[in-house]
Image (cartoon, rainbow, N blue to C red; front, side, top):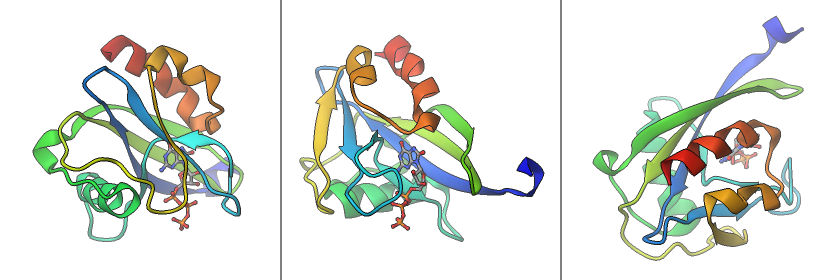
Length: 136
Ligand SMILES: Nc1nc2c([nH]c(=O)n2[C@@H]2O[C@H](COP(=O)(O)OP(=O)(O)OP(=O)(O)O)[C@@H](O)[C@H]2O)c(=O)[nH]1
């Protein structure tokens, strides 16, 4: 029953480069939804704000650093998966230090928003694409 599903809060980020491209990351083999392309981010841990989660995850996954003032809320995903309901704010970040580097074996790609549909993404992400096309 959908009413019994727990809500999973995941914070995600559209990193944007100076050409208006967005970074997507391919989920490695062995994880749920392996092979799909997603926005960097992860689960909000107890005691964290969504912004703190992103600062931590961007550092862990990509080796880059940013700060709360550089994270702008854009929209959110609300999507029911089989075992949980995903609530995922999507932030935009244009200012960060370092060069994004795959630290967890994932493939990375910089993609113009109007080409994002060429990359298979989790179903929760598809409604986010028009917001990025409008913004960029
Ligand atoms: N980071 C991220 N997660 C997403 C996106 N879209 C989406 O459905 N998710 C889902 O959000 C959940 C949390 O992702 P996660 O990266 O923290 O967790 P995970 O499955 O890798 O597990 P783990 O970190 O515990 O190993 C996953 O079920 C993932 O499929 C997205 O664009 N970015």
